[in-house]
Image (cartoon, rainbow, N blue to C red; front, side, top):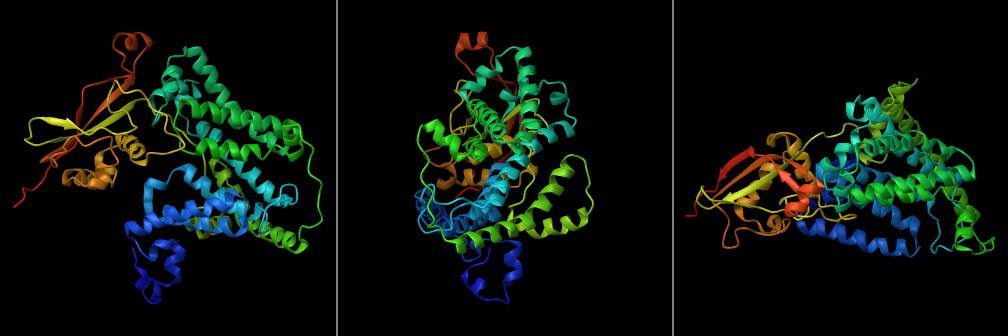
Length: 446
């Protein structure tokens, strides 16, 4: 990571490197910079919430989030991070280009609205396409939801109850998900009432997902995109209010420039996004080599993305337990705040917050320790007793000083049945642990 002097030195940095890794952290890479970027983003969100200078604030927020995604690797590489960035890019040409937003005074360019709807279509339709294209037997056999509630990263308490539903209901629910994701998005291109039907069904799907699993801000953002399908007249009827009178005060110059900007964004992104969706559907369109070059150019901006969650369902759940020891004989576990760490611990509600370390532990359990490049450094920080790293956990099992040894084991976990939970109140059962990583030994202090 470059510092401010390297940034100022064009020979050392150059614009080509910035365009390849666009981030404000070229100016500085300290914890203070990281905290400052987050705080600045929060501060800039306030005028956006109040409808002030949206056209100026949105590009800055987009740049700050892009900066974070560029340097944080897999910790900000989730589909909702990409969706937020792409939504933010379109919002620049969708929001009013005025200093103060007045309801009913500004009509966004029609093309900008269609860019949002096209993004919503790709998000939902691709989610269904990848499930069928993957050939996953759980989706093809309509049994995906029979295991999903148990094996998803962070289930909610209602996820446990959903897992207890009968097999016939799980198959019916799986079929319903596929129908909504594959067929309902086409209603977006219909008339007003068809759009409203699509909005209701898509928002309902996101609500059900949010009730059974913690997926950060994904469900809120997806539902917000779907609600743009409901026109202002429908909202006024729902609120039983008369629409505001139109006003001729909107500047035609601003409107023209905003329309031009919408055209530029569409010309740069639509051909690429069409090609991405076609490839996900197993098609190769004419001119794909040309759109591929544009996609490679836009790739560092992370604002034209492929979508599709849970293309292949995880059939079994594995959990990693990290333990420390002072003497190498007696081991004490590190308990995480939100991921299952104790079979008696009830699943938690944490969304729209995302405990990204807990999420990465779920991914790490799917493979081997050396496949997650962050895992060993994380363990070494625990072995050193790093306050910043230990602060990410539910507590410190070694308050008097860091342990001498550290290891990680992995075991299969299952949600208990209703009868099992009635006996001892446990939400989970765990199998026999097997070695996953380590042990590591800390050098003795001199």
